Structures are given as C-alpha cells and as structure tokens.
Length: 332
Image 1 (cartoon, rainbow, N blue to C red):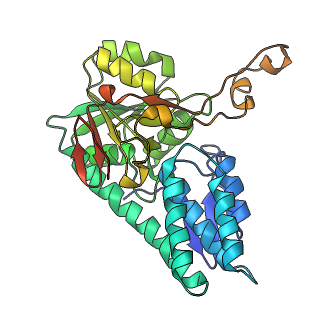
Image 2: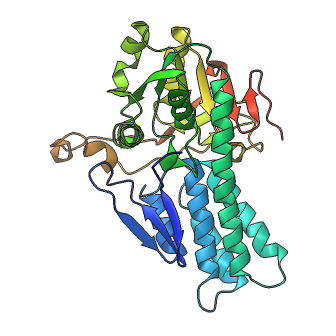
C-alpha cells in the first residue's frame, strides 16, 4: 500500500490534495460543488488521467447533492466537467458512466451517484494492483528502471500505474532503483514522482529530461515504464509531452518500453494516435521556468501538454487484464 492519497470523500465533500504545492506543502482543497472540482482539474491541482476521472465522478455526485438539484442540472454539471481537459480519456469514460447512471433512473438519486463514484474509485484501485502484478511478470532479474511524469498514487485511485509496478517491484526485490525524469515544464516527475518515492522509501534518482539518452547509453537502465492518457485502437498512446522522445531513445538503445494503463484509458473510437486531441496549455508554464524570460518581447511559446508515442515503439501495454503485445488491436 502507498502512504499517498490524492482524494478523500468525507462528510459530503471531496477533499483534493493540491498537487501544485507538492513537495513544499501538503494542503487540501475542500470541494463542495462540481465547479470547484472542475477548476481543480483545469489548474492541475488534481492531475493524472485515472484520478481526474475519479474526481469528476465525485463532482457529479456533489452536483446531485445540491439543494433543488435536478436531472438537467446534473447533466449540465457533467457537460462542465467534460470541458476541463481534452486529452485524457478516463475523464470522458467516467463521466459517461455517471451520465448513464443519471439517465437510467426514473428520479435523480444523489445516493446512487455517490455509490457509482465510489465504485469507480474502488475499481481503479483494484486495477492498479492487477497491473502491478502483471508488470512484474516481465522482470526476471533485479533491474533498474526509468519512468516519466507521475503515474503513482497521486495520479490514480490506488498504488499507481507505471509507478505501481515499480512500487511492487521494489517491495518484492525485482527493482533496485528508479530513475525519474523531471518532466518539464510543470515538473511532475521532479516534484511528484520523487516525493512519492521518498514517502514510500523507493530508491530514486532524479535526472533532467535531456539526460535520458546519456543515461541509456551508459547501460544503467534495463526497462522503461510509463503511463498513458489515451490509447487508440492500434496502440498509439498519448502521454505527457516528452514521452515520445523517451520511447524513441529506448528503441534506439534496445531497451523495452512498456505502457501501463487501465482499460478506462482505451478509446476504441480512435483508429490511431493521429486522431487524439492534444491539449495546449498556458505559455506561463514555460516562461516561469526561466527567470526574466517574460521580460523579453516577441517570443512565441508552444506548450503542448502531451505527445503521441507510436505503437511501433511500445514493447507491451499492461492493463488490469494482463500484458498485451503487438500487433495491438483494441477494438473492444
């Protein structure tokens, strides 16, 4: 079990650990409305595809518990939450499930919607455990692994996706060290993955993103585990910006590259990664990394939050249903 918990339901409110402040401070946001949840998702106070879906589900439950809530007001809340972030599929999957629950009842039931949100939360925790077990079957000897962004308990309802595999690998003695990339410009690896590793006594070495090639060339990385925000039918995978570069370098150096994600991340409506909508975020996320940069005029900033890793670079995709190997076909 991880000591890290990103969401808590308590006495009719959703408590959200504000990930923008980690590792400096652990502060909780008290969400009593779906709008507070929506803003937490948009601002990255809560981030990570699976936990975004879970938070949104609780947001729907909050909307249903409001005085004079109606079916139309709850459906409007679902539409609001749907517009928070465009790339991660778990958000849309969870909201569609909540919408089905709303529409399947003759009258609005806040109790039933809260029960559904808790079920989504619980199922994701179980999926994390199953993915961790499946991922360990790939490791025969004691290995050092590299991961990108944050895919741990902060990003999920359980021990994590890629970091969940790593957690269990360390606990069972199959993984001796994890290399964490800082993950610019927001630093999810440097701030969040490293913090989680420290909390759970996982041996971690932080590297800058542009050190990956040298690290791989040194022979110190045996395997790569990353997460995913959306997976197309052919196995093309969107993940945090920079993942494609890590995957291509792993292919160049003959290092297995694995994606770890629950089935709620799969979008079978998309034939390939070319159809995935990539979110572009505020240029300030980039400019604040370099003091004085905002004072320069006529500097354009491009800040995509995700990129797409072609299925050809992916050695396997690990889900709660097991290890999937190419050629990938996730039609169902």
